[in-house]
Amino acid sequence: MMMKQADFALRARDRTELEGILRDGNIPQKIVKRAKIVLMTADGAGVMTIMRAVGVSKTTVWRWQDYFVEAGVAGLVKGRTKPPGRAG
Image (cartoon, rainbow, N blue to C red; front, side, top):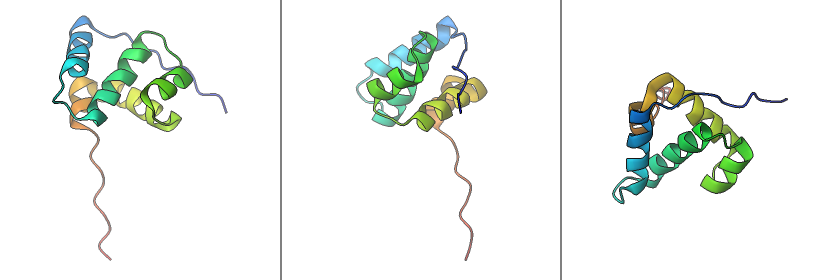
């Protein structure tokens, strides 16, 4: 099954914020990886290239590309909320 290459335009303000995340040494690495995924996508890198450079799986790349489109930079920093576990 072929997945369509993610395609989105990155606003200048978003790019500045994401590049700031990469430069800030106090940001958790999981957030830095998310920022790298989005910046590389915006620069036209393919999923395989991003996977290798960031060190994540294909589904992780797709997940954060989709979530950026949905929630923007703030969503990448905050992360996805997980559904509560079932009481058993």
